[in-house]
Amino acid sequence: MRLTLLRPFNVVGADLPVSSALGNIRRQLLTGTGSTRTVMCGRTDVRRDFVTVRDVARVMIAMALDPPGGVVNVCSGQASSVEDVLRAMCRQLGVDARVELDPELVALPAGDVVVGNSDRLNAMGHVLDGSPEHVAAAVLEDAVLA
Image (cartoon, rainbow, N blue to C red; front, side):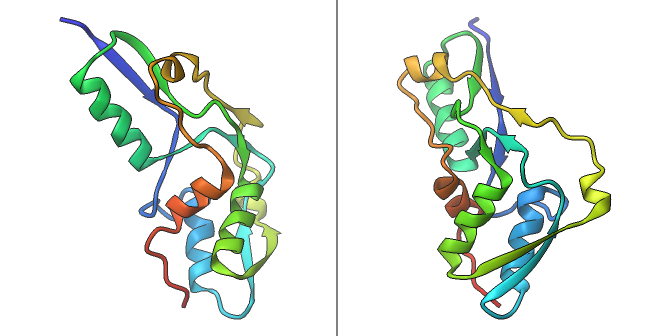
């Protein structure tokens, strides 16, 4: 039996809990009013290797049909800041955001950068888009402004 272990990185989609950074930002952008929305959040400078749930599902299906064996990082190999994703969300919604840092959220420990090595995944023909625009579109899928 060939064992394959998939290691998905920061998986995002429209159903993120509000306890997550992007889920919290999504809720505030969608429930706010006016052309400028106030967003209370933690650090926006942290950079993550965000991948969409649809991209992860696509890779999982491909790996189930033809398991390569070993460990495979399911990542884009690209780190985007929370700030960049927030700004992309604003562009897609046609609103501006005024960011206010929540001292309790800022105090939570978080690494500055978490990014995966996508070399093996890419060599298998799977190149994932970790751009802020792609990530924002996934987080805002089916979104309706209040």
